[in-house]
Length: 84
Image (tube, rainbow, N blue to C red; front, side, top):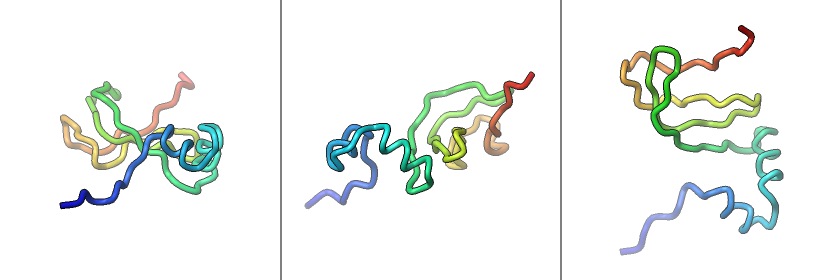
């Protein structure tokens, strides 16, 4: 039985297939052409511990997507401000 088609590629695979560099891919993602999705290990976000998929957003932030496993199961960790 054949494997199903791939749905995700590493940045290095994309750059090799498209004949471009990582900065090009990052620029296209920043312009909203597609999403860059990555996984993170357990991290502390305020009082919540989160882990899972992170989407790098065109606005320069990284948002934890709703499929993330939360120990408290209360929702998505919002972006924080370093404004103090």
